[in-house]
Amino acid sequence: MKPAPFTYHDPATTAEAVAVLASHENARPLAGGQSLVPMMNFRYAAPDHLVDLNGIESLRSLEVGARIAIGAMTRQREVEFSTDLAAACPILIEALRHVGHRQTRNRGTIGGSLCHLDPAAETPAIMLLHDATVTTQSAAGSRDLPMGDFALGFMTSALEPDELLTRVSFDAWPQDHGWGFEEYARRHGDFAIASAGVLLTLDARGAVERFAMVIGGLGPTPQRLHDFEAQALGAMPDDDFIKAAANAARSVEAMDDAHVSARYRQHLASVMSARALRRALACAAQRSLQHA
Amino acid sequence: MPDIRKISVTVNGKRHEAEVESRLLLADFLRNTLDLTGTHVGCEHGVCGACTVMVDDHSARSCLMFAVQANGKSITTIEGLAQADGSLSILQEAFRQKHGLQCGFCTPGMLITLTEHLRDNPDPTEEELREVLTGNLCRCTGYQAIVEAGLDAAAKMRASKAEHA
Image (cartoon, rainbow over the protein chains, first blue to last red):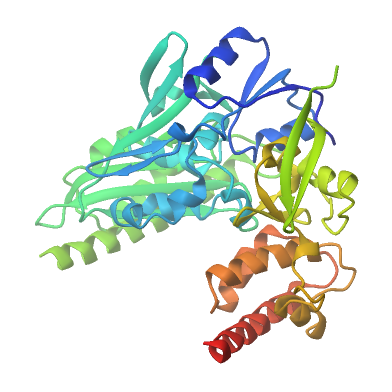
């Protein structure tokens, strides 16, 4: 239960950090450490070089406007308590409250969660829901990737070994958008067995104008329901519509594990989807009254 | 060759200089190097919350931080909660009065978590206390008495603040 020996590096800039990553074999960046350090304690992970990013001030930033940009080392706590984000992107705050506990969110970072890419993690799901862009940096330069391409597979991101995630950015939804996030975990703060997030706007008739829906916890990475989203446009959001959304969520391919069968995961995904969608609709209806 | 670093850490207001191996966890540094054994080590993977300490202004798992990362930081452990004259803090006293501890293993983490929470939220609901305590596992006392102690301490802290205002 103690980590294997490693050499510690504490760069002050991103350039220094990527130079260390590029020049050392088996080097790992350390963000908030709320997933990597347990893995090191169990010796599931045994990097020879640990590159601590906590001293890189430029990776801690939060810009909230028409475009929202979050520096990779911004702590979950800082996002959770941002009043600007609470107004511009309330679903992210709601989802973050399900991430671990107060003590882990105090240190855990947005970028760390995106790179760790646990299948049940809320932050990757919310970024996928927003079609976020992930920006990475290596000694060779920087690149932008859509979140969907960044999340390659089970706990596997598209990051190269010498690359760092530096920020994630996405467009804010219109002020009157409706949103809903629901998840089921056995205990508060545990990894979700299934989660669902919904963003939508309604037109003047009350029909669906814009729609995005994500399911977390079922497959190796979070999944958008692209087919259903396309069908949803222009639909009247009645009970049949909610049933159709729940059925679409149920059809996402799901993993089995020692605790939970794939079928149960799919069942939970359908229930969470219906609840999230109902909340999003109620929220949009209420907000359109406020803006009318 | 072990990777040794020099660190300077303030713990409970007292500055300590030490040479530590990079892989030394903060929890083990506090317990074994500084002999502050009030911080307990339970699961060593961030689940049980017994090792929770305050790092600068916020609670954190000391089993998920390396001592070297505490360089230049200010740490508060359970040994730093009592008042200057050695008498118990309002929260500690409430734990004693409300039977908020039995075996005492989880208590250091419970106290740090609640110290932070009551600072930020002086008038918590029972629901809020129960939610923040999801990060601290208790296997013997039961949460009922711990939550009661938290609510009692919050009320007493508000009263004491009003008195001094």
